[in-house]
Image (cartoon, rainbow over all chains, first blue to last red):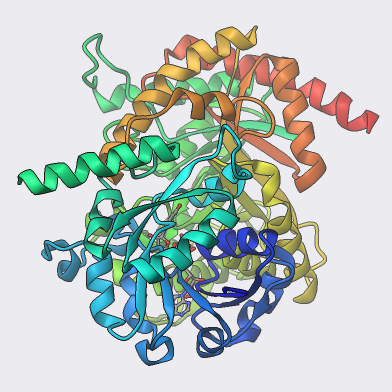
Length: 216
Length: 347
Ligand SMILES: NC(=O)c1ccc[n+]([C@@H]2O[C@H](COP(=O)([O-])OP(=O)(O)OC[C@H]3O[C@@H](n4cnc5c(N)ncnc54)[C@H](OP(=O)(O)O)[C@@H]3O)[C@@H](O)[C@H]2O)c1
């Protein structure tokens, strides 16, 4: 059971996820790239209720870790601190911010598979990347609400089901897309990315993407 | 509260949707600024932008021209992409415009820009994003705060300046320098630490959710010992005013749709969604599109959360017909502004 969620990255996405997690009743620890003191005031005011820590402390404190750092900085996160942990990868390769990243641009695989090479001993799950950080907080709805949206999840089934429960508690229906490779279906440029979908609509989009993949 | 407008330039479209000459977008913008001054708007911001659809690449040049053609309006860059420009030149151009204006009407808003066309254009490496911004802002502030023409500065992004003259000086000694941010908490803390006024660009979500950021800004400023009148907040949002809300929506939607199709193609998201638009054009949404009563009420509603002293709107993109921009600017000055003043006084 997940009780503490640790977040690496106290930027826009990390803060929005932190507040969403607190609202859903989780304990939250959070780190920026530096010592806890650097983000203490930010956390006190913008994410009240969360505990500011160093990145290593966050990794050690949490049942589930969320990677919310810019894609071009993921290698600055020490993989040894995440060994064995379930880790949500929220990152997108976003050229306006990340610039040219040839290792990502020339690799035919999805970005999360590349990230997974770096965190080889972690259990990486891709989700929360295809919703805007503004929308995460405004779109959360209780289960069964007619306006509830769905979020896609890709990763090894056991870790993905742990993450699915968290997503449901955040206020979204979780739709399992398949193993990490299936994450390409909701990367930037896909029909899913940035849109709003019910669980049925999202399932249909993901099935369509998988069928197109098989045909290719 | 000051009421204003801002623009990145808006290249007009041909009937088939193709772009007309980018120079026309600049001329339209210049005319709009002159009109805004005539009708009594408080502020006009020119955002540095480098795309065919939004061609206002040179705020300094446009502000200098506008300074000569206007009498009262405050003119500012909104924002200057300071990371990839030369802070010495940015300062000199705006200080020159300040001299032309008679003094006290020209401001700089320093930002990093949410798109990064300027990095390849001016030959900078995106890997230096943070360092370029921090150091160039420091240089800009060093020049501005200098008591005389003679400036010294050293850093890593350019050769040191050793007691060289940077002229002209602003008429009133210094130019107001604002820090622009899109909502990253670290930027609010930075603005507070530096004691600079902060300008929030809120282009989506629910603007009142910026309240903790303004608190973070004010607390950071207080902690750093800044209790000056410089600690203040402005807000830039999308918006367009028309005689009726229905007309405002009808005028604003096509440009918004065009802009989002363009952005979506660039950034990999899908077609814009009318439901998303509809949610944004009423409280608590981020688009201040409506009749004067509606827009005034929503600005005052946001003021209850952010305590901002200036609210300025961008409505000209995707080829908005100039007459719609002109009517919006006029209504903002003559109808929205007095309503906002009345509502705030009654609070
Ligand atoms: N924009 C969206 O709506 C959206 C939606 C979904 C996903 N995403 C993805 O989410 C990620 C984060 O985006 P953002 O907009 O939140 O970026 P951001 O505002 O720039 O924040 C990034 C944060 O990561 C921190 N960081 C950098 N290296 C770190 C490290 N080694 N350990 C811990 N923290 C570190 C930074 O701290 P310092 O300031 O100390 O460097 C900063 O707090 C990106 O990959 C983006 O593609 C974005």
